[in-house]
Structure formats: structure tokens, C-alpha cells
Picture 1: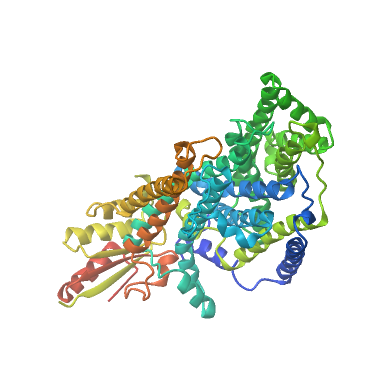
Picture 2: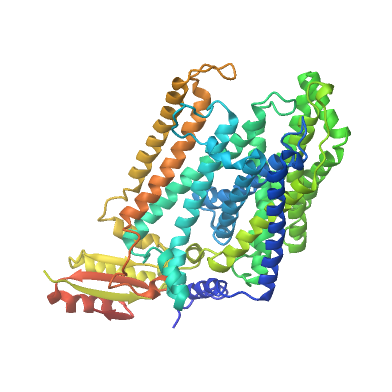
Length: 448
Length: 168
């Protein structure tokens, strides 16, 4: 017997059923996708092996283009993660109810995006077996990292971000895995029993859990704002024209949220279709996300205008020359492409019809991702390509090795995400139930 | 002293709440309430006789430890090898604030996790005798630990409040 729910709304038992049916043995299409993604990842790993074997020259690194695509893609992936934390922590603190049905997917996206981003400093460092040099550890030579270097701040910011995101993610999963445990049988039940940590939903467990969850959200909120600010310091602390700006921190944070929401849409639209979750991820959710993309796009456009204005109004010759070179020289395609994708194309979201049209949403989201990748490319490649002396100017040419590694990083991300949605509840059972009407025997009780 | 565990399974929030109030009124205070989701009304009722969760104390201590560690690590290691880099004094606070901030969040977050596990008594290797798998689905449970001689009274109280099922 199931408890009756108001018409048109799924009951609590429906939520359990609809989530439990998504975990389990998937069909052939899923495996076909996994094979494809695995193959692409394999190519990326081979390319990385090739780069280690031959040296960093294989990645097209020539002075002055020593950052090029790896740092571009690193910043891109870190940015993707931000929307997940925004949805799971910031919107939780604001009690925005619409977050409940998308936050699990978004949080998984955050964890996997940061895991992907974390690969790039290693790939970029070349001899990644010395990566532990980045961390402070006691040694006989009294050698410690230079804590005045933004790159060391980055190490601390990113590793803290990854740790806290993982903790937040796992804490949120525990009661849901308990629901999976109670709804499954055989071997699956055994695995979920271990992972649920013996969760029972007793009052004392909930009491500490809720308190911990709120505090984690409160800690994650300043963290998410700080992480991309620290990433932006990698640039802003340097003297390169176009980088040395106090605008960078909010500019990066806004861009990160912007691209992250686009990625959330790219991930949840197929999930909604495949898992038939139309009852949970409704038009209201799509509308809200499209609006957030629109708002962050407008803020971003404001920053773009500010950047150009600052260069012009500063009277600084090098600042002006840098903007001029970006807009007119060999990288002009990236510059104008970025404007089109980030500032022009999201404007269609002013129309409600388009905000609710999944094809449009998907199309614009892809454009936004391309645009945001181009934005980071524009900061790094033409930025380093045209600094103070024409003597040091230089063009960057991508190689097969570094391009394959970049494509491979997308495969790594999607492999993790595809794996996740088949073994874990990608919709939060508990939080979705919380937003549904609570079962009451006497309907008038609902009024108090 | 032997205790009996009586469990009432409920389908509704209001009946569960009613049962908790009635049991409390009769002096039964050893209650465990199982809910599929946290329900504010039930929480409020329980919180009346209980101090606030101590998780926040752990978070605060963890966070302060993080701040102290961040400043200690950066200042101490700079003094180990006093080298002027970037035209800044070996001990310069503004950059160290970033490290201290990150460690504040890191230690605070980890302490919160530990607090949740310790105080919530997780991981729990054996399920409680009164646990029922329906409590993660759509049923509420009120388990009462009471002296065996009052078990019948508890049973009738739970049934009277609207329990679907009562068992010992």
C-alpha cells in the first residue's frame, strides 16, 4: 500500500522507485557510449605517454607560449565545477527549492570536473612524478614551497576545493544510498549496505546530519568564491598586459558559474530524457537555469566592456596594444568567437519560449562552453603572445599531442559521469521527497 | 534492567507527531523516531527536550585549527629560510591569508564530517532492532524503549495515535 499523494505529484514511494530503476545493468547503447568514451580516453593517455617520452616540445610549447592549451583547459574545467557547488551549497543556504532535483547531478559534475582539472597541472608540469614538490612536506633540506607564489595558493585552493566537494557529495549521498540499500537485493544490497554506513534515518542521525550539512554548505560558499579568485590570481598577480587587473577575480567567478550552468544543462537534459524524469526535472528547472545563464552572461558582457574600457582609459600603451592585438591579429577569430558565444548567443534566453525549448537550450549551452573555453584561450595565448617587447612575440601552434590530451580530458570527465549515473542515485531521493507534500492523515494539518 | 522495544509504524506526519506528544505526556522519553526525510515539525518536537547538535562546535574548532595551521606553516617555514622573494619580506601576511583561509575551510569541513560520523554514531555495523526498511521509503517509525510491564500501555498508545502496525 502506498500513501496517497496530491494528484499530479509523485508519491514518496514513486521517487524511490524512479531513482532505484536508474541503477543497475544498463543496455547496449550505454556500453557503446562507454566504449567510445573509453577509446577516446585511451588516445589521450597514449598522447600523454608520448609527451612524457619525447618532452614538452611535443605539446607545442615554445617561448613565449609556455602555458597554452593545458592551462586554458585547466581553468575551463575548474570553472565548470563552480555551478555544482553554487547549486548544492549557495542555493541550499538560500532555500531555493528548485535545486533539489538537479543538485546531485551538478555536484557529481563538480567533483568530476575538479578531478579532470587537477590532471592538467600534472600534465603541464611535464615531470609529473615530482608533483609532490608542490605540497609542503618536512625534508632534510628545509625546503618549503614559496607561499608568496600564486601557483602555491592554487595548490591549496584546488585541493581544498576537491576535498570539500567530495565530502559534501558523500555526505549528501549517505541517506540516499540507504534508500537504495533497502530497495535492492543480492549483491547490490551488500555493496550499498557498506556504503550507506548503517544509515537508518533516526532522529539523532538526522539531527547531526542536518547540522553538518548546513555547516558544510556554509563553508563551501566562501570556498567556491575563493577558488576561482585564486585561479584568477595566477594571472592577475603577473605583470603581463591584459592580466594585471583587479577585475579578474569577480570576472573569473562569474564566467565559471556561467559555463558550469551550461554544463549542467548538457548533462541533465539527456538524463531527463533517458530516465524519464520529466516529473522531477520540469520546465521550471530549465527556465531557472536558462535565466541564470542569461544573467551571468550579461554580467560577463559587462566585464568584457570594462576590460576594453580600462585598457583604453588607462592611457597605458601596452594595455591598449594588447587589446588591439587580440581583436585584430592572428587570434581575432577566438576573440570575436568568444563575444558571439558568451555575450550574443545567450541573449535569445530573453524569450520564454526558447528557455523552455530543449533543443535551443542544448545548442546555446554548447556555444557557451565553446565560448568560455575561448575566453580562457584569449587570456592566455594572445596575452602571452603580445606582451611588452615585439622581440618576444610569438604564435602558438597546437600539436596532435596536446589536442588529443584535451579531447581525452573530456572523455575522462564523461567516463566518470557515465559510471556515476548507473551506480549511484543521480537524483536526490531525500531532497526531492522533502519538496513534495508530506503525507498527512488530516489535510487541515497542512495549514499550520 | 530489561527493556522492551515497542515500534509503531506510521504513514503520516501528523499521526507520528501525535504519537510522540502522547508518549511524552505519559512520561516515555526513550524515543527513537525514524523518518524517510527530515521533517521540521517532528524535529521541532524532538528538539524541545534536547540540546542543539554539537556538530557546530567541532566545525568551529576545526576551522580555528586550520587558520592557526595556515599561519604557522607559512610563517615558520619562511623563517626557516629567510629569503626575500617577489620583493616582499620573508614574513608577509597578505599572501599567507590565502593559505590560512583555505586551511580554515579544509579543516573546518573535515571536522564537520568527523563530527557527523562520531555524534551520529556512524558507521553503524548492525541495524537497530527497531529499524524497518520502509523507513527510507515512505513510513515513519516511533520506537519506544520502556520497562516490559509498560509495553502494553505503549502499544495501545501507539495504536490510538494511528499506527498502522505495532510490534515488539
